[in-house]
Image (cartoon, rainbow, N blue to C red; front, top):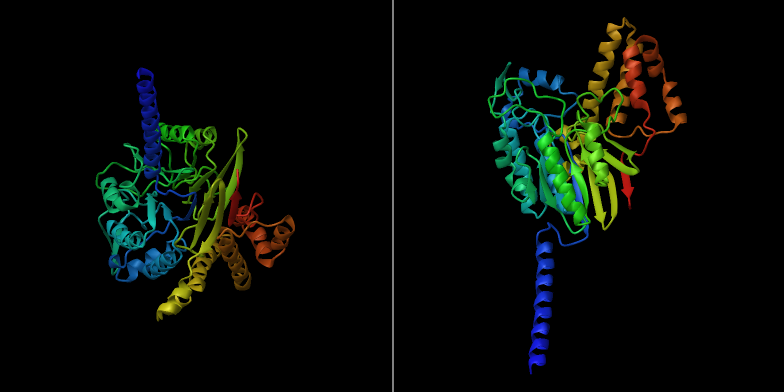
Length: 446
């Protein structure tokens, strides 16, 4: 009888243990965002949204557009309506924005952009955001009234957490108490780290321009290591999302774009076998992979969603397989479908490219005139060449062979620049050819 009771108790303990183990596993499943191995997310950066309520389209606004580096500021509402409609139709699991949500940190712009993101959330699409260097306590936050620029309410860190509460901060797995960084347990294979890499003043009335450069602060670095260690113990891979870059994606455009402690941070990422970092800030579409201590670390820098071709990345995760493909917001098709009557919106892709071409040409005219070139035909030829090369580089279409690069340098525009402007020649040489890898597609099965 005693032996029977012992056996019975042992049997009960085994059953209870199995139930506890099963429930523990079930609980861990519930703590992840998705209980599936296949996940699709879209990633974009630098939309620089400016709400229409902040401008009367007067001379002050026209002036700011001339200094906006090719950003489209007139029809952002329509372009976001098109993007939201496409996303709701195609239903990715997540949409991620890596900073510079607003033009210059206007609180009303953040609130109105959040309205678009709410539509995505209502359609069952999870949205996650992090701030960029233009979003928090930006002293340039303005509205444009007639000939005047007037200060408008900027975004504090508390504001950012409140406005975008449903887009990361309420649904995070963990938070960094010293920054706007947070983590998300996506599924049983991946964790996502959203890092605040920005340098901004404390929550006082901002008076100065935003800092361009960035860093991973010491406290945030320590918190990041803790999150990476948790993922490592769980045998999960981690993707990192941040605004600033870890690599110099252009030899002339690195100061203020690459975080100031990049070497230390890259070592941390390599130590924990992080496969991919997603960033923005530079406004140029570029993918770069480097080997650090035998580990291949890739950074995908998204071009600005406010310039041509209004690109975003479609990322598909299937187990260990990662596939990234750049896409473009098709506003033209949306305008046709909704019978939008605004000519610029009906032909939005061409309108965007013309804007950005114009900005590049302006650079060419300015530099060449200062260099003493006065021939109108040569000025036009060289300026058009610069505009075209700018579109090519910033949209990620500069990956080419040595033969193709040599052919570009034979063009009259390049020859004129080479003869008259050392500055422009160095700049053009830096953007003519990307030799490391295709900037619009990435796949990795490791």
